[in-house]
Amino acid sequence: MSPCLPAFCISLCLLGADAPEHAAPGVTSLTNPQVKFERTDQHAIVLQRAGVTAVIVDNHAVDTAEAPGHRAGYNGVAALRHTRQPLNIFCSPYAGLNFEHIHDGTLAISREKFEPRKAPLELRKINAHTVELYQPPTPNWKLESCGRYELLEDGVLQYTLECIPRANHYRHDYIGLFWASYIDAPADKAIHFRGREKDTTHAADWIRAVTPAHGVDSTHPPDGPAPTIKVDDDFPLTLVNHRSKYRHAEPWYYGVCRGMALVQMFRPTDQIWFAQSPTGGGADNPAWDFQWFIPHPQVGQTYRFVMRAAYLPYENREQIERATASHRKALAEPSR
Image (cartoon, rainbow, N blue to C red; front, side, top):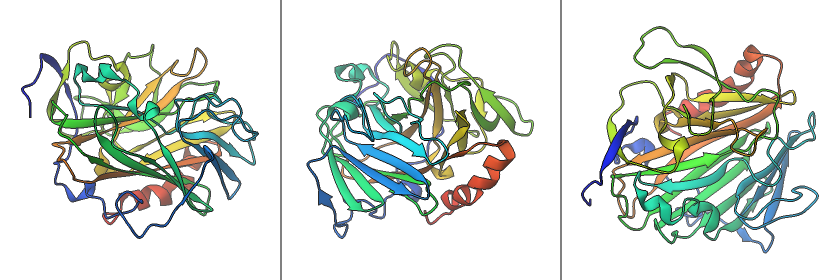
């Protein structure tokens, strides 16, 4: 690795690069030649199941009945709707589960802050309920990736990301990846998760987190030991490195919009950091985000993480816990 640049430190909960939890068994068409897919000249595919509709887009502009006014430069889920709430939870020009940033904590990010949004993407249809977004090695970071969006039987969306670094460009010896979901004008911008304040040992409790401004108290790491890595002075992605006073004790959180809950659930082994902004998508539109760090990346090695997003009518916290319990249990299984 190249010598570290002048930097200040943040703490990250990271697994070793050779940890089996990160090793991909060949899920997507990037790593598994047995996966059959259909290429399309369309830039959006609609998935429907169990009362949920998800519109998956590449990073071209789309203007259809299902995804009106979607702007170029945003990928992932252009629209997420439910039979109980026909309005899109995401800001129509933008997206949810939008692959936003690749970085290594250095000012090299300034060459292109939004490389996953700008570099070419190929939309691949796997079956009626599953599509993938394949991205060849990106111009700057040389990260090849494939994200699979699968609408499960009960309408929960499972997202699997596999990626392979094709060059050793990561000067601080990790890869940082960031996803954003731009929420359309919720009455309450808060996210909710179980956690505790850092440097405390009391039992985890429910936290209602609202950041005071973009890039202030913006990210909530997982609980537990936190090795230190470096981030350059003046690093421009302020949602990445401005830690709040909280740490999450369980790898899932939710927010509420128009009587519906968006629940984002992660594998414990992936050590995901929650992130948020009160104005990520505009004055009334918060961003409910997350980030993943790959330590000690090796050229040619495959890395993977898995998450699920549930969109369902909201009654109360206890109902959300019950409704998502089986999915959180599945994500915690060692075989995943």
